[in-house]
Image (cartoon, rainbow, N blue to C red; front, side):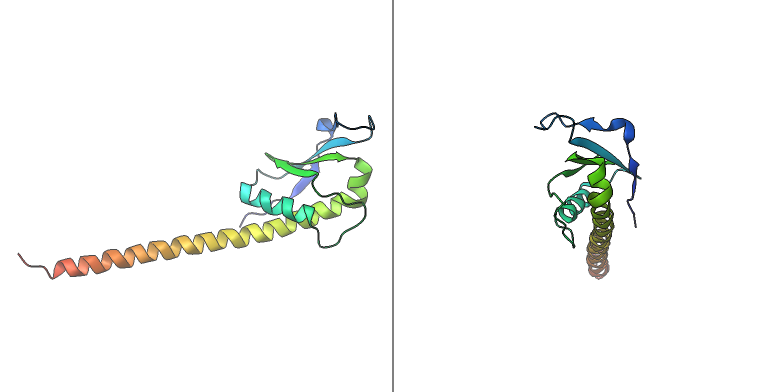
Length: 134
């Protein structure tokens, strides 16, 4: 199954948050991911980022988003990423990978069961048709 991983902070894409009251202090910081995750994975990631297993007073739910192959932290600092968000991101990515892969396995199993039921139904109909004589 697919494993998504944070790669690095996209240094050249860091921007100043325009709506910040404290000019120059809060940033929009993109963190590269090894590939574009599907929307199901993104939903898992955001939920796990917003609700980590261990909470610190520095954690701020609601600042993470995923666009393309980047995790975007909106309204933070590099220091906060180093001290707090890095650990939360790694945990959220790992948990999202696990949940997404479980979800995909269930989807594949459901599709396999559907195909098997369709094959059985077709086989039953073919067997019935063999007994019809003209």
